[in-house]
Amino acid sequence: MAKKHTPRKYEISREFEGNAYNASYFIQSKMVTLECKYGTKSTQLGTSPPQTLARLLFGEALRDAKARGEL
Image 1 (cartoon, rainbow, N blue to C red):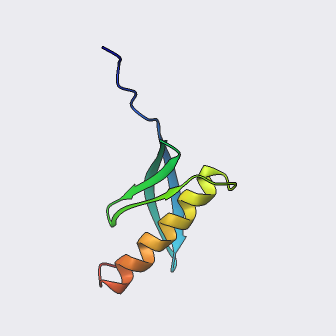
Image 2 (cartoon, rainbow, N blue to C red):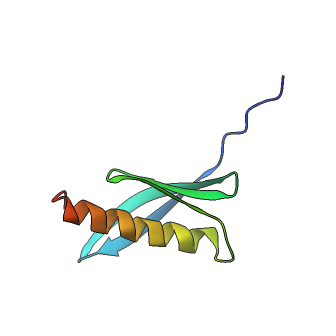
């Protein structure tokens, strides 16, 4: 039986409206997945570096959280 590979998590921080926030992301099956306390977002890897995609996803998660009144 093959071992299941656990993807490595990377930490990322971002400033949003004057406050600092932290999240983590991982890469698996040609996808970048961001996880933070405001939700999880994923996108396919493309020509942009994974960290750049993670920062974009983090911005979306923070804007969505603000729209829901969580920030």
